[in-house]
Every structure is written in structure tokens, then in C-alpha cells.
Image 1: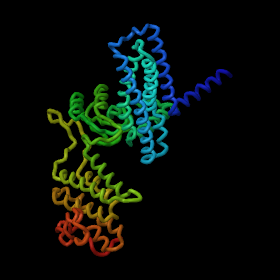
Image 2 (image 1 turned 135 degrees about the horizontal axis):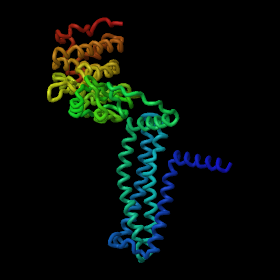
Image 3 (image 1 turned 45 degrees about the vertical axis):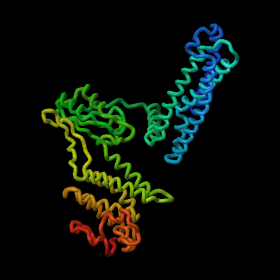
Image 4 (image 1 turned 30 degrees about the vertical axis):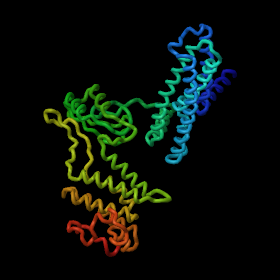
Length: 449
């Protein structure tokens, strides 16, 4: 019975240590005081000869350093606690109140706060010994104090980095997902691994494809005399064990399989590098969020996003797109990857903004102006996706407004009395539309159900 009670007590203590924010800092506080008392006792028993003043400095300099450090550590601890509260508030407001628990129970944050508080308690205990009189200095205790102060500075930098990463969307989702995976592994035994498929290279981790060393993969495929086909596109998510490459033309030995899998960088979030589509994705998110924001919509911010999207696509429209096929020195195809097409960029840039902004005259006008201008610089074979967006925009505006005059104002406003901003002046009235637009329905006239 006694053993069972002790097990229950240990279980509850472990639970308390894992779920209480104050327990680790309080333990570090007591540990700092205890360490200072122990080292001061060692200094006294050795006659204060372990570390001399050539290392610690004079009594006045030691007192100045420890006083400044103690004051700074108090301020630092308050700032760290404030950052923790800000992170909690951001997580509650932007994501979910239920995600706060993972932030408060973050062990690294608790240890950082504990180091700051413990170093403060240690410094105050040692400072009392230094200030007690003009006797010899406790060199060992002072030297350890210097080390703790430097450690606190390093941990501060790491803590700020950790906090900044933790309040990101990917950081918060990743933390919850990692904890959930751990519980799945603990509660549900893993099945025996399936037999390896020689035609597939699985991913060793999970994440989003962010970097791809083409020349390295071409060299691997050339050595194995095969063709590697990348299954996910740049920016796609790959689960652990999911197909990363398909092997065509010949077997891929185990060293080459491992090298190919490790050469693809999988991150928790997408990146601009190697993937300009992610930049458009973020601009679209800003524009759509400004339209959907409640209680106050902000179509002007959406127009600014459309301005940036318009400029990017204008630079992209006449350029040649890569084929996604990479050759070795002998001209043989060794690596095949999926690449973004012009139609994909157009749909990414305009689909969501068109659906969200059809009911906003300012947004609809700016979308139409951007699409009309892109038609003037796009080659003929790249105009159909733009024409499709114009047609869908016209139909969306007709569905959003009941009156034909409102439809006209949302697409091509009257030039009088509404200002002269670029959203108004960047396109001519409908009567001046070029003949190439004859394939679209006229903007005026009866609404179509």
C-alpha cells in the first residue's frame, strides 16, 4: 500500500511540474540561492584563494557589476513575462483560446524565466557577501556569477528567437501537431513497416517543399542512370513517409535513395525562395482579409494588394516559363518537377479576390483595370485566362448588384464626381473597349440570372 501511495504522489508531482508555469522558475530561484550559499562556503573554507582578484576584479568593480546585473535581470524578467503574456493574447485573438495551454507549458520558456530569476537570486546572495566589509572576495562564487550573467544574455537572444518563432502560425500549429503525434505514438503501437517500393522514394520527414538542389539531384540520377520525378510541387505539403520522388528507368540504390530524400528541404512553412507564387499567395490573403474583415471592411488595402499583384504579373506575362525538366551534361533528362503555369498564376492572383471583391465597387474596378492592362502585354496564347477572369468578374458583379446602373458603376464608373485615382483613370469607358473583348457579354443591359 505504501509503494502505491508513493507512486501516486510521484505521478501527481510530475503532473504538477508539467502543468504549472511557476514551478520551474521557483525551483531555479531556490537553486540559485542554494548554489550561492554552497560556493560561498567553499570560498570561505579555502581561504578565498581559489580565484584571485586578477580574474574577478577589485571589490568596487565587482560590486558595481553585480549591482548593475541584478537590476538588469529584474527588468529582463519583467520584459520576458510581458512577452509571454503578449504571445498568449495574440494566440487567443488570432488562432484559438485552446492553443494557449501549449504556450504556457512550453518548457524552454519556463527554463529561460527560471535562469533569469535564479541568476538574480544568486547575484543578490553573492552581492551581500561582497558588500559586507572590506575582507577578501569570494572569487569562485563571483566567477560563477559572471558565467551565469553571460548565460542569461545568450538565453535572452535564444528566448526572443524562440518566442518569435512560436507565435507564428506554423510554430503554433507545429507545436500542437508535434505533441499530438507524440501521444499517437505513445497510445497506438505502430504497425510493421511496409516493404519498400523501389519505384518510390518516401519522405523522411513531414513539411512543405521549400528548397530543391537541382544540380545535386541531376547528379544523383545520372550516377544511378535513372530519372527522378518530384511528386510534390514547390510549396506542396508532404507527409512523413509520403511519396517524394518516383524513379523511372532504373533502380535507385539505398545510398542514392537516402541522398535524394535528404536533398529536399522540408520546412513547416512556405518560403519566397524558389517559389514566387507564395508572395502572390500572401498578397491575396491581405487583399481578401481586408474585404472580409469585420466589422469594418477596408477595400483600399485590398486595392493596394491588387496594385502589387498587377505589377508582378505584368513583369511575368511576357517571360518564358521553365519546363520543369533538368538535363545532365549529355542532354538526358534526369529530373522532372511540376512548375507553375501562367494560368496557375492568374487563378492564384484573381480567383479569391474576384469572389470576395465582386460586391465592392472599388475592388471590382481595380481588378478589371488590372486584367485589361495585363491583356495588353500578355502574348496572344496567354490571354484566354485573363479573358476568363474578366467574364467571371462581370458575372460576379451582376450577381452582387440588383440595378444595372450599379453594375456599370462597379465596373466602369462615371468620370465625374468620384475623384481621379488610378482605380478610376486606368481604363477607358466601356464604349472605348477594344474589339478583342467582343467575346464577352456587354456590361450594360439586362442582368442574367
